[in-house]
Image (tube, rainbow, N blue to C red; front, side):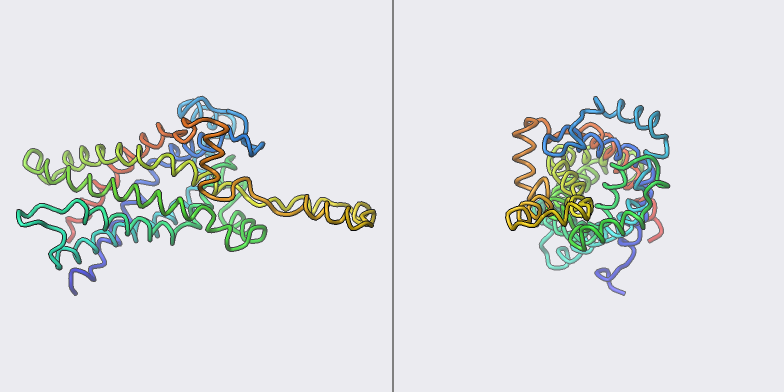
Length: 322
């Protein structure tokens, strides 16, 4: 079996991603809650319930129970089993292809940053687009809260499919792919760069993996948070069908004129708060200010640090089985 067809980066990447997800998921839940609050266009999330990550963590635990912090954990695990597996496996496979064709390293033997970033960007965008339905399920369950017993994975999937169709499962796929591409383009090359330059000091040991992953997480958090806010809000919104089902038979009978029927149909038509990524970004900045694009930055960075540390240490240890 050739190096290009090596299955181990895919399997090890998926296993390490799942381990990291379990260890940091409650932080991700606070991030999601912070990102959706304060929306002027969505009255159900217009209230500023949390002052920050710590306040969100405490309030969710007290008001909804600790279990609510893990609402959405199973679609998150399923996401990592697909997204993590495909992303890291594809990234290292693309690097092998680039190396074989003489594109990755220069004459001095150093890695080409742009080629490295291109491999990471392609891997991130492709894997996140494929795994988007699991991301939608995760966000919806995190926002719902109150533990996974109230709204389980299959029930959440059924509600989205019935009321929003297949397209509902791929809501926000554009910014999702963009975010993953940005994170991968920053995170993976920075990690590899730091690891390479720290090799003389720490060697290929846990200390090197720890420092390199921590540095990589800061850059990716700064670059990806605005896209993440837009992605979360698009995924959480849903078309409004309730008016169609709430009309009584008497009200339907009373609609005898064409004007009345047209007005009722218009008011009952399914709608979205945001028509797309650009519209969401514009409305968010216009109604809440530019800083709203960085809602949840602290939990994003706080989570990325431990997530990357757990992932890369686990991945590097699994590589010892090569």
